[in-house]
Amino acid sequence: MGELIVRADAVWFRYSGAEADAVRDITLSVAPGELVGIVGPNGSGKTTLLRLVLGVLQPTAGAVEVAGQPVARWSRRGLARLVGVVAQREEPMFPLRVDQTVLFGRYPHLGPLGAPRRHDLEAVQNALDRCDVADLAERWVDTLSGGEWQRVRIARALAQEPKALVLDEATANLDIRHEMEVFELTARLVRQEGIAAIVVTHHLNLVARYADRIVVMDRGAARASGSPGDVLRKDILEEVFEWPVAVTQWGGVPQYVPLRRDESGADRAATP
Amino acid sequence: MTRWLVLIAAVAAILLGAVALGPAPLGVGDVWRGLTGSAEGPAATIVRDLRLPRVLLAFLVGGSLSVTGAALQALVRNPLADPYLLGLSGGAGLGAVTAIALQLTSPWAVPVAALVGAIGAILLVYRVAVVTGSVLDTRVLLLGGVVVGAFAASVMGAIMALSPAPEVRNALMWLLGSFGRASWQAVAVFAVYAVIPLSMLYGLARPLDLLALGEEPARFLGTDVERTKRVLYLTASALTAVAVSLSGIIGFVGLVVPHAVRLTWARLHRALLPAAFVVGGALMVIADALARTAFAPLEMPVGVVTALIGVPVFVLLVRRWAS
Picture (cartoon, rainbow over the protein chains, first blue to last red):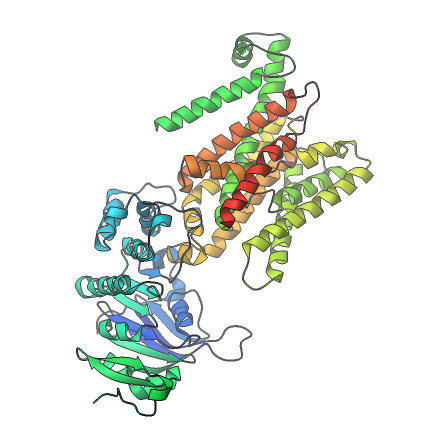
């Protein structure tokens, strides 16, 4: 096993004043060139787990390491050079141009007063190219479509030249094509450039087709963890999501179909 | 680069014009001779000892309030934020008036008292805003600012009505702003107290760009959000305190100027902050020139002029923001 980018070891977390643990005994490791999916119902602790991994919250028990060092010991600036984050939503207060927005990805690499150097501008251009938004560089971000804006934000994360990319429901508002483009781009970065990716999503079928491993969270704990084939099972999904499903195969990967109430007894679409 | 030179030249012309303007009309020649020291006599004295420090102080105060407004707008992510509407000016004014009523009248001490007042105000505003829920609603924050500002103004009014100290009697100066007490000493006080917070603010230009995106994105792009916010609130309080302790409460400059600069000049803070300083300074010089010449020999409080311009712009901004 090579050097891990992210390692969470038996992590527990409870919000102050809460009656139950938001994250219970989660162990998670992500290596370079690996795409790990995190799925689970609303409120199952996915975002809390991410906030622990990103050092925003400190675990009540257990340890989180990023690039071999406890996450609490990284400065925000140091962490931003290692991990790029794309969240579901971001509403700019004072809209900027696309190229200005992507240049923000270089801020963790710049001194407080130093101007961007050649390498910074190259990194920006490179990120714009890879996310297919170079021709939007001069546009104001408030004129972009949802898919374009999301790709611009992935470009900004790539301009950070991170070793890991975290997508937190980053495709939730996108139509099929734009969502697929984000998954394709992420998978390409993982396969070709050895970036580690953590993808939190509700779209189990998609993440099953791109992820090396999936963690299914339920009430703060990992109900299942492993390859898509291991975790996208009828019994696991029905238990965790509390809804009858059928599981079928597409290209060697399990895909689930949520059942209508009147179908659940018959189980017609179940795997042959 | 050329546009910076054009801007600076235009501002220099405004400053010189403002020095020439006043109850005793002076020609460009008088101003020049007064500035260069190649003449003596009443005209030169008026230029050097009355008009020039007044114009300079107006410029510096206007510039400081404008960059403070720009920083606060990014910090609380609300286009309607400014030192006046967030209650900072009111708190600073109350601190200054309290100090003077307690016989702490040294121009070097008053800004310190004003700083204490400004910090007290912002803490109070935060308390008010957080009461409504664990997540800070910036609209409630502004409401809290207006309420705290109004409260501070009424306490100031009470102190001014009841205090035997003659220096606090000039209520209009404190509540509506005036450069009538400008002097070279005031310019010196400003320079000494404002240099550090102004440089700190400029050093935080990039974190301000990121904070305008929101706290989460700012954090993940490398900003130590909590520390940066504390430093920003402190610098905003310090700049407001110096401005208010020398010229009273002048509203709306900090609100209007950053928007004008964002629309016409730059949106990234490394260019926005210096441009807002220069434009805000020039605007304040014009407002002060209007205040002292429009009804000469009577003088209007400069805050009246800035409010007459600022309130309609505020209404426009609210409408734009709401849509």
